[in-house]
Amino acid sequence: MRWLKRSKQITRLLLASMAVSVLSSFSVLARPDWPSDTGIQSEAGIVIDMDSGTVLFGQNIHEQKIPASITKILTALVVIENSSMEDMVTFSHDAVYNVEEGSGNKLNLEEGDVLSVRDCLYVMLLQSSNQAANALAEHVAGSREAFADKMNEKALEIGCRESHFANPSGLNDDTQRTSAYDMALIARAAYQNEQLLEINSTVKASLPPTINNPEGRTYSMEHQLLSTEDPSGENYYPDAIAGKTGYTSQAGQTLVTYARRGDRGEIAVTLKSTDFTHYSDTKTILDFGFARFKNVSIAENETACVTGEEPFVAGSESYDPSELYLEESAVITIPNNAEFSDAEMSLEALPENHPKQAVAKLVYTYNERRVGEAWLFTTRPVEPDALEAVSPAGEATPSQAGTGEALPGDDPPGTDTGDKGYGSGFQFPPAVFLSASPAAIAAAGIGAAVLLLAAAGFLLYRHQRKREEELKRIQREKRLKRLADIGCSEEEFERLLNERRQRHHE
View (cartoon, rainbow, N blue to C red):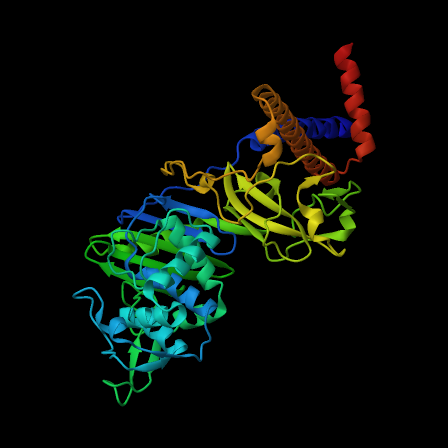
């Protein structure tokens, strides 16, 4: 009877193991969907994870809109990178009076006023002073037009492809446009700057004496989600850290907000709110991002490249996994019900501005959405010319544009991205290309395509094998645990299983 009871227990265990195996095979193929059950009333909006850059929610994120005064976030970043905080700025007649009619002068600044760069930044970011923006632009570049060129250069460097800035203040201009996506990239870069974040997270500041304020004065942050004067107010958001408001008659209300809850940070942008929904929209999508997603450490979970005996090849150099380590702070952002293993890893060639000792960039996608990246470093001294291409174990890997931004695939389902022209970065050597015949070029193209397909197929095969091996390991651990629970050894289990198979064949 005891043997019969144990046999029944083992039968149940076998059936349960089979069920786990079937369910697990389906889970490998079908990852949890990306949450998308929210929306906003503003015409465009986005929330991204501050640490990974992952787009968590988006609505019309690539549509060009008028930014208004959230432009001043980019202005502040360019100023900080091109001047000293203690530099003194003299307000010209043009800086004070050459502004759009009705745009105001909240602190009554006057031609001839002299303030430090630091004081100008406080006035500009907290009180949205157009006069301070103009004066800073003239101080840094000599004119607003020259400063706008610097703004566009910086935006391009950050990864913006849908923006053009014509002035430092954000006042109406027929050519001044951005997108929610680009503005999120700008804000993320800006709030990674400690000086800018310190200024833009201040809720109250003091103005030194000026011509019209001989005793000086104090003033407060305009962004209501950050205001601490009325924590019970409907627009107060305790997790908000920094941000900038914007409004013109053409732009409507625009808003950028950086918030942090626990160990996660998020950037929210709303554009073209015409019914004063910018605050409620921002709270909605920030709460959505904090509630529905999690960050997972790459260094603590990734085993490829840094473990095992297989060498890692970067350009002409081969590295032992023991010589490699991953960026410690890098994370991926995925839905709460997903696992790190649900994300797929690929390798990008190093961009020109890569960190010292980096040999590759690991890029992670989840259902074709970019969810994070990490630098792969070596403890060995690196020759600059040795890292032109990167591949594991000598496999050919096509070069990609390694700018570090999220790609069009980051957009939530239903987002209209359009063709943004992101290139692969691959170029034929000019002399060879120009001298080759059309037939030779076609043959070379076909050959390259075959090699790429073969490499992609091999990488996919390796990835699938890795998943299958991991699945088998998990199943075996579960089986051993259940055997231990019923007091049966693995050897006895195998013996009974073989006996059952024999009886089945007989």
